[in-house]
Length: 315
Image (cartoon, rainbow, N blue to C red; front, side, top):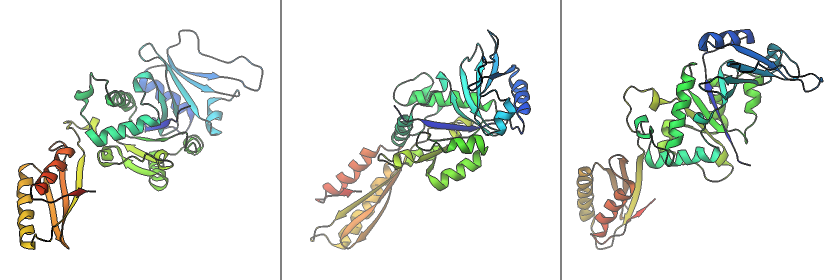
């Protein structure tokens, strides 16, 4: 059995009473809403929508009315029976959708969340036109995320959060019983999890070991999908190096090399901060991945010192 994430996204169908929810769904989508009832205690047949019904189907259990179901803090399950996107399902509270299910919105299991984060750290966040017709590597996840955002944006969805549902199932209580809004969930994520924004995954080292592997909380405001002009958001590298000097090398010679290193690096769009401490040259190389691959940056620094008879190391 795999471990799954939950995706919670805000909406603007705010309601205090379930009658408002029904009216808001009808008004927003032009589709009817049917209240289905199932009975787990009484020996009664379920009340289900008619055959070929097209619209929203909201389920309740134990013979409760929808408003009774809501007031008791039970999850409201909503299903869309429609020829265009039949089979969409989700939970809803007054502020958000959760666990939205549909093939074109599927974003994978928790291992897929880490895979996507690692891919972004290595490659950045591509613009939509790049993955429009591609399915290799993590690009199918980007495309499904775009589909998911476009559907939810018709309900005012602008921000989602992602965390491991199976390891943090207390979220169900916060969502259904306490009716938390997005900011309450985000504050919880900042306090209890390893919090990161989606656009900051370009510099985020996703934990590979338990328990931190399951404790990442991602806030995604779809920045890359909401900008008018999209650029490829690339990782930013901060490469630390140090090089112990031989006894035969004077400080004057070392400072001369350091100055030359800075000049040569600038020609390749590399920014180098370098200092001399206790006969050790050490510093940082700062650069964008779009300007220079990581392995070439290391090769540049290594070659510079190796040609001068010195060995450099990286951290």
